[in-house]
Length: 90
Image (cartoon, rainbow, N blue to C red):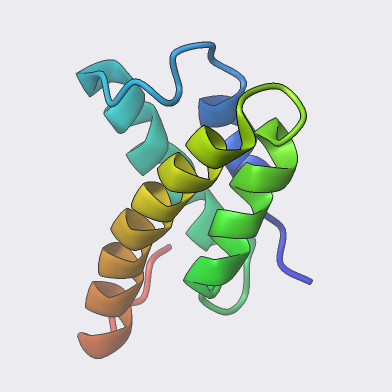
């Protein structure tokens, strides 16, 4: 099971789901840390599920699922770019 705890730094902020530029920045920094924490790239579905699990009981489930889908897609773009270009992050 991958370690997704790096996303907590973004998810714990009350505005995490507003798409505010500061929240976007927190998301990208969290993704970078997530990549560094794991030996292999984490599949985007894990990111989606982690977001839903983290906020599922706190907000409207449909809203959380929609936002999780958006951010999993953003993560997928980053994941695909790194994978396809064989980029190693240190």
